[in-house]
Length: 56
Image 1: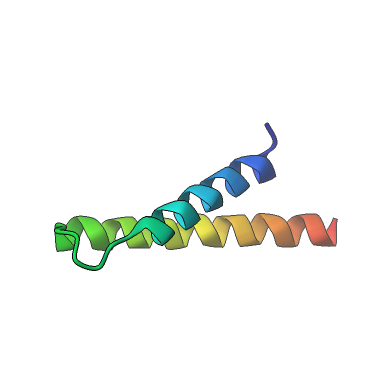
Image 2: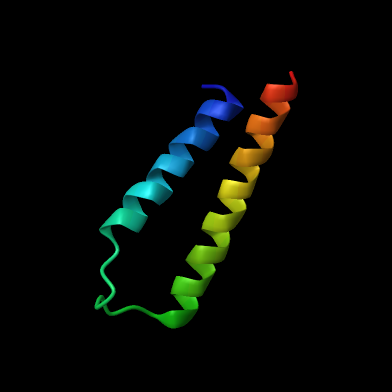
């Protein structure tokens, strides 16, 4: 699996989890914040990889 494919799988996981999120779910605010920051980092990495491929 290429690096781009790995990024796309991670983006799909983030999208699936985001769509399933329920506002009234009980959650640990610190863990939630940590997950959001990690997801933003993963999305940024995926965008950077797409830009590298586009400039190819």
